[in-house]
Amino acid sequence: MQIEVTTDRNVDGSDELTSQVAADVTSGLSRFSDRLTRVEVHLGDENADKSGPADKRCMIEARPAGQQPVAVTNHGTTVEEACSGALRKLTSLLDSRFGRLDNRKGGATVRRAEQN
Image (cartoon, rainbow, N blue to C red; front, side, top):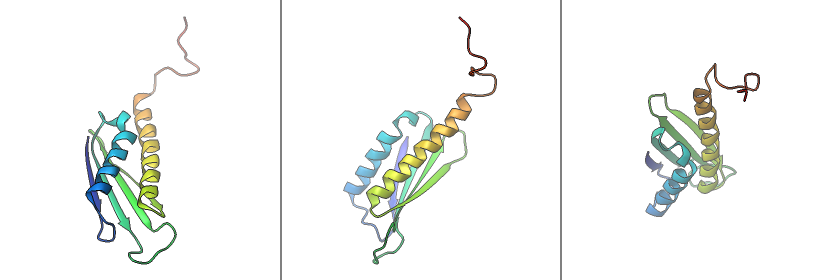
């Protein structure tokens, strides 16, 4: 899984921030690493120099192998808060998407539980 972190001109895209975000994404999506080819993280400050509630934005796009990309966006008061929220949203989305793919019609259900 390849991880790319980009920032707009209003967010300091230091090496420290980039490596921290990449480490958080790697650990947060580790169980999906064999199913994802690429993850792009876009960080931005929507109000630029002005302060305001929830003006930091984190958009994460994940590209599952052989499927259409999925993306989530989260806003927060800090870049870290926005990233952690977006990572939670993406994890939930991928759980749902891969869960549906793995449990196709005809699989084990409550009504058709295997008899011993």
